[in-house]
Amino acid sequence: MGTEYRSPQVLGQFDAGASRLAALLVGHGPRPAPSSRLASRAPRRRPLPGLAGHGTERRHLALVLVAMLSGCISTGIRDDLTLVRELAHASELPDVARPVDDEPHDDVAAILARPIDADAAVRVAMLNNRELRASLRELGIARARVLGAGLLPNPLFDVELNPERQTGVEVRVEWDIAGLLLAPIRADAASADLDVARYEVAGLVIETGFEVRSAYFEVQAADEMLAVAERALDACAAARDAARALASAGNVPAMDLAAREAAYEEERVHVAEAELHALVARELLQRRLGLHGEETAWTTAGPLPVEAVERTDLDGLERRAVDASLELRVLQSRMVAAARRAGLARLEGMLPEVLVDVHALIGDPVAGDSFAVGGGIGVRLPIFDRGDGLVAEHEHALDAAFERYLGLAVDVRSEAREARARVESSGARVRHYGSVVLPARQRVLDEVLLQYDAMQVSVFDLLDAVRERQRTERDAIETRREHRVSLARLDALLAGHRVHDESGASRMSGGE
Image 1 (cartoon, rainbow, N blue to C red):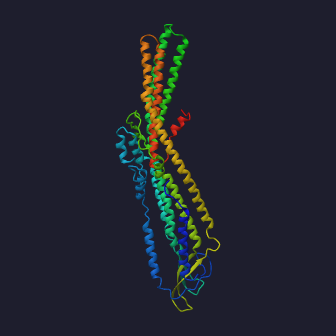
Image 2 (image 1 turned 135 degrees about the vertical axis):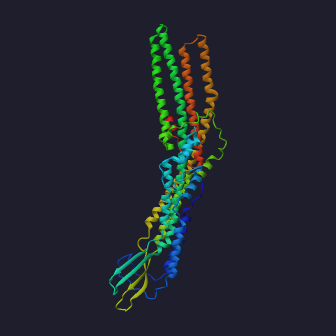
């Protein structure tokens, strides 16, 4: 069920590191002195003589560490975009590392110049969907936070004229040594949040692809439904005209004529509804593709495919869905982030705040020296506040994420079974409509036509048979749309993200 997670081991690594670092600082460093000006307003320490010139190696080490830490983390997101594309199995993503451009992508016009299929529509959305592009750019926010977490603390420069000592000028530089040791650990904790952002954006790429496919199939189905509704309107118009002709000859009662005219007017309403549905479906796809103006004149590649797809790759579906789940990886990364922050908080609670300063006194009339350099160290001991509350906060966040992880694994397995059932059921119904139901309705229509030619039934019976045939066509179209959406939903699940067909759910609940 994915990567096994043991929080005690993760937290234990930080406990051991904290003990070693605390021993290094307290056991081998200078003897603790009163706190410096960063910690409190305690009286100033006298400069320690003989320290001038002996901090060269330490300064060189600090400069090397600064260079290493600043060079390890880049502010660019090209590597993140490459990883997201690989995680989402996307063939192409926009290069959002460049400045924002309000013009469509260069390839969009070439794609829309020809009738587009579902794959072409997805490609347009990957390049042109502004919400997706914005989410890709937000990877830079997560990366910038990692960079910020790993930066070293800034030194404090303090210059005083005529200080309380008998000197003309005092110059002081203070720096937090503990921040130097904790910076890489903070960056490591923040890097788990960058992993979360990558997985979430990769899931959004998969979800966007599914939504585009679902909207495209809806456009195809709506166009076919409109064509069927128009043919049904023609049949009702023919029945109405026939009833008027027979009524004028006195061969049908006025009640039959009124019924045929009412049926025609009702069918006109149905056609208007079908036209609106086709327009709404097309505009929904327009928004998914990010198109406006002349770009909206695209055409589809044709109606929905008639044949059902036989999936032969459904063995081990639950295990594959769990292994591929990006949502589970998000929770794994959240657990890692919580564990690292708990360990960091525990380490910060154990380490004293160590402030090292170098100061120079210029113009001492008492000692007769014009220039003296010294140093000092201030330690704030973690006696009362050891960060226990913050540690507990992150540990509880870790436990909550673990609970959600276990629950989500159950949900993913259930969704895999549901997706398989939807694909198999819709495929079987598509095949049944194509091989049994529609041919049966056509045979009924043919028999009624023969009886009409033999003057055994009226023209109204013939038109009623035509309308029943068209109702079956509408049901078959909706089943083919459902089958294509179910296939796309299964593919998205195996790619790593759960998705849902809102339009299909509304139909099943009686929305239409």
